[in-house]
Length: 334
Image (cartoon, rainbow, N blue to C red; front, top):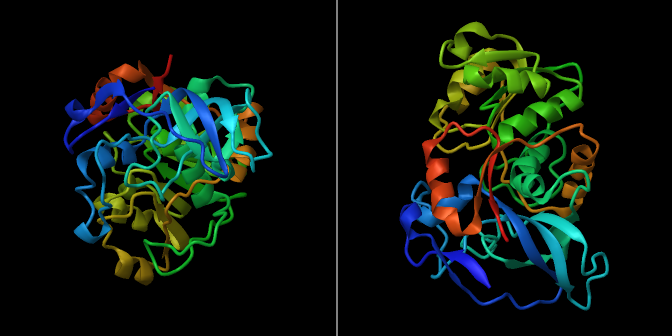
């Protein structure tokens, strides 16, 4: 089969479109003929060697490695012990995450072996491009805001992450035009929240169309100077800047940083009576089935920033590096 592989860590230029062995069908797995692949930040973190992580957290990567986790395609074959899927089924998945952090997910390819438990039927109302764009971003928003869905220890904090009630609450979503953000704001609206979207002003018409009640242009206004009394902040950008949102929250509110590394405001959060909680998104086919119904009936939708053929994965990573992405970038597989 054809796949995108890299033989050393580096920038987008290390990605090569080349021949690779087709995966063998293992017990409990489904072989999927891939039609589209969704891009996510862990794809370039892997390509770069996870240099933003402390050394003790960096997984050992074997070369050549195939990046990627999110796929949509058609079942090619199933293992003898798999009963829920059959050849010809249209499916989508976030493959082996975070268990495949070292490159075991292998989604940038014409075929991928997927554990049946991580697979869901593709929403019939959307095409493979939109389905491939959804899994990691949608599961991240779902597990942070709706249902965690597992009892695995939290590697990022000692306590289990617990979603908070959304009905009738005010939710601020930072990075609302991005992959996780635009889905988080739609899930909050679905659950009956008043949503404040924070993004570049050029995205306001789209964010209003997705259901946001207010839009704040961060290029013109410092959110922390004008917003008070919020119940929940979902910071889809995260990092060291997350602490500035503490002052926007009411006492008893919650701050959910999607990317928590660099946050140093725990003591301030305690003083303000704010809960700060995060988690690590995990593959979950059952949750994708549930969330997929919302994609099927149009309750939520996935925005596509741009598409590239699989052979142009390097160009897709260059697009990602420029930032200011509206929705998701997707690779198409002929």
